[in-house]
Amino acid sequence: MKDTSLNVARRLSAMAESRPDAVAVVEPLGYDAHGKRQYRHVTFRELDQDSDRIARGLRQLGVPPGARLALLVRPGIDFISLVFGLLKAGVVAILIDPGMGRRNLIRCLADAQPEGFVAIPIVHAVRVLLPGRFPKARFNVTVGRRWFWGGVTLNKLRGGAKNSRGLTAPGICVALLRRLLSAGDHSEDLEFPSPGNVEAMPASANTPAAIIFTTGSTGPPKGVHYTHGNFDAQVEQIRDFYGIRPGEIDLPGFPLFGLFNCAMGVTAVIPDMDPSRPAQVDPAKIVEAIRDWSVTQTFGSPAIWSRVGQYCEQRGIRLPTIRRVLSAGAPVPADVLRKMKACIHPEGEVHTPYGATEALPVASIAAGEVLGDCPNFCPTKMGLSPSVPNFPGTDPKGWLAKMGLSPSAPGTAEQTRSGAGVCVGRRFPGIRWKVIRIVDGPIRSPAEVEELPVGQIGELIVRGPQVTREYVTRVESNSLGKIPDDAGTWHRMGDTGYLDALDRFWFCGRVAHRVLTSDGPMYPIRCEAIFNRHPAIRRSALVGVGPVGRQRPVIVLEPNRGQTPRDRKAKEALLAEVRQLGASSPLTEGIVTFLFHSGFPVDIRHNAKIFREKLAAWAGRQLWNE
Image 1: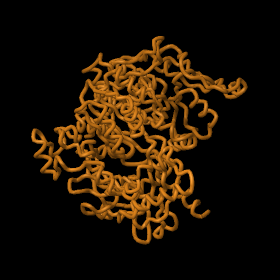
Image 2 (image 1 turned 60 degrees about the horizontal axis):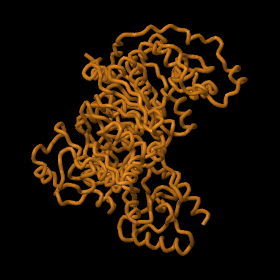
Image 3 (image 1 turned 180 degrees about the vertical axis):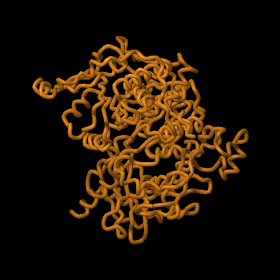
């Protein structure tokens, strides 16, 4: 018999029962006359009741279970309450990062075929202006002031008076308003009775919960099908692996993590930032929120911690309440790890979970292991909790020896600098993984998989309860990204790398980014590490020019700000030093072509993933013009 009690929204209701008056979500407002930041917040009971009202309103509106509604709302209390309300109503939330750009955003939304929008006013204005792209959108809720597009406001959905707050749609003239006004729509006049508690829609592990889009760093963004079982497993795995407990206070730099907080009984302090542009974060505002609320944990992309770490280092700022920093989305540079460790609690740690939109979390490593900070080793510094296999218990030094580590051993960062790849750590307990021989095409069954031994580079595949089973847009990608198995679907991570003797995965670059030369494959992360040692180079990128199998390896160099060579003589001097670095390693000694680039194209979500396909095309044009 199927377990139908897995609706992940039940976790919020459980916290509302056990911690009713504890603060669940904090949202920043403006500053008072004295320059002090103001906030508004809700308790777990209030958040649970509000999401009940939203769920009841959706049902009264006629939204059926399984309907897809696009959610485009700024991070804050409303966003979190809406997601839980949608989950309780059995609605599938389409969650999409507006930072992917207008063209991709509209294309992804159209591909997902939403049956309605829960969104801020400007989104509804675009929806009405593009009616052919969203023909099924009939259940529409405006978060803010409703104009000419019909539907109901969020306040009305909750059962309250018409909402006078919110954003307007600037620049829309009166004539356009009159033409687009839907005179026959009376949905705002519907009556929504004030609800009591709402029983969350029964859901099993396979019940659809959300569609979340990939970043599109190696192709068009794809809609990933999340189930209640995926979300439930994510909450448990993250909570248990890092030892997160109710009563902690988190600053989530990624909106979805705020949902996990509420499901774990953790207070979510929403930062004053644009999560779609982490590289533009104001570090002073992050520090302000941490201090105002005595934040104990924080999550964000490496781009955030690069700015915050540098800001704290330059001003001698300490954040002693922080015990745990999580950073994901791209490899975190060692210098960022050092700066963040230096400003948080002495016994705190920085963790870098590894995964993908389709499978998260997969693995994790702590800064102590990366930097070689083993003399101060404790279980949590390695990202371990009692639920993790081989937990070191009260004898961490003995555990280190058993695992082949020495307190005086260098961290993985030293091996990374030598071209070993980036160690992303050990797998979460619920994950199974294999490194398989790379296949450029579909793998139809596990029988076609060739598992590789320790130390040999291939593609990583993973399986587990937090691993999603399919794409619901760009469905042709299912044959390329998934391997059906009777015991559960394997996801092809699209990452190259190898497992070491400690069952740690070393990332060597994306499968799509390897350079296939006549002498064999070359892996970007391994080769780039050699050139990134130069103090004048901010980052480098290996790309291939020419036909596959006979590609010419090219290293594109992005100098640090202010260190770009200004004349031919300076350029030749820097190139001579770079070539010398390349000749010092067998991984790069055959590379003879180097190009300078003023600023690499990178993804918006993490501001760290290099668009190597674009760089390869650019490099080809540069070489053609020489």
